Image (cartoon, rainbow, N blue to C red; front, top):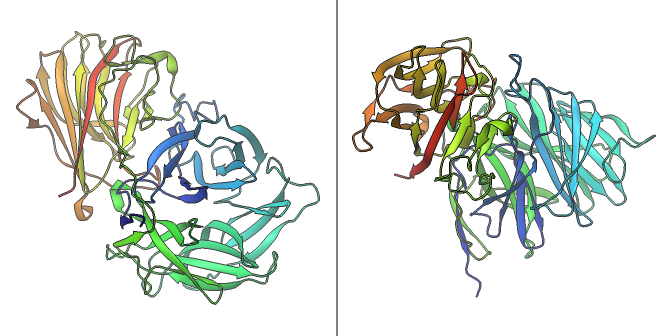
Length: 505
């Protein structure tokens, strides 16, 4: 008898938003939004639907301009790639998304989802929250917010089809609705076209909920049904938006997500059954906290990792992402073996404009990241350390003064992106340990900042940071390692290690 896997929701307590899942053979893949983090469009895979690992990315970078490069005061915070659609058709994997900053629609294809390479096509114009659908020998993308559109693409999805369908499909409910239907996922099953959406009503329970529209005809008319309205008992935060898929045993599931405040938007697995041709999400209308799937358990792989930076080549583990496009000339894990070396290659006014900030996600209920920083090669005006990264950031690090003196500082966003020093103490040590602790329990959302001069005794610096998930970044808090210059380029910060621990208590 096949061993079963126990699912515990949420399956990841970390920022993995706008999920789109598929099955290819006996392997499940899903993609999520990555916005300004590079490489982007992370591909996660699983055999048992509970334990997921990062298998790769669709692109290293997708544009090369000032905004993507954090140059000339420009950025793509809250922009970049949104709500990618993942599909598998005739042996080819397809990913498509829109980018608000470029006003373009991107389509990537490969026959090897884990290794690539990916072929890119760019189609002018936005197609908000697209859902890609292959229907026989025809290809369509559905998209929009409230006003839902359909555009017919070429068979390979690389361009808009000349003379194909390109029109408003229907308008979704607006009475009493704050956020009208968006986040489309499209399917052709059992003689129906199904379009899944999220919406956020202002009345009733007033939380995000899952909506299904269906029609036997591509162009409608479409029927509407609320298929899930549940919060897993968590602060009226609705579990919604995502896709459905089946197993080889013809059992159906949905991968959706839930807002969890500062940690971000976290994925949940939901059983799906069928009744009168409609998908029925959950059990008795609820997302179960625990249930079993008829799949053999797989080994758990960490989403966030410790790293001793002991690499034989200048290539980082897949768990790391850069904040915006990196400048590969100014980082290395081989120049000083066993260290991540960050060199200040350009000037910046604050950590929000610092190039080559290296990040990972954070996880609930609580977690912490620790580094050992060697400041000996930093220049006057340099600032290096650890950041709790969102618009409302907090940092702990070392600043070098004009005469080479150093001080340990804890900073926050002063209001316009500039760094406001909350606490500072002079230090003589060139090697110092730094730590940020994140408490996401029950949305407490407090980060505290610590240092040690001897690697044994830890002391708090500054105030606890009240972490806020804000839409200008549209991303859960990340922990990042940074070094930037305010006066002169060329200064170096060497990070001996990054050590991570998650608390489940």
